[in-house]
Image (cartoon, rainbow, N blue to C red; front, side, top):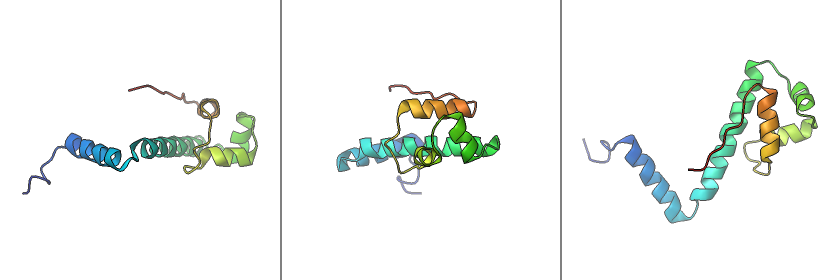
Length: 99
C-alpha cells in the first residue's frame, strides 16, 4: 500500500485545508460548507417534525420566499438572527464558536 493510502484522516483533512489555503479559497469554501450544513439540518428537522414551509414561515414570522432563501444552501446572505429563529422554530439551538 502506498504512503498516500495509509495517511490518517487528520492528515488528509489537513492537506485539503492547506490546498484550499494555497488556492486562496479556504475561507469562502468553509463559509459555504457551514451554510449548506445548517440549511440541510433545518430542512431535516422540518421533515422530522412534519413542519411545512408555510408553517415554518409562520413560526419564524417571515414570508415563504424568505424561508426559501434561508433554506437555500447557495444563499449566504442570511443573518444569524434568522438562523437562530429558524433553529428555535424546530426545537433546536444555533451553536457557533470561534476556533
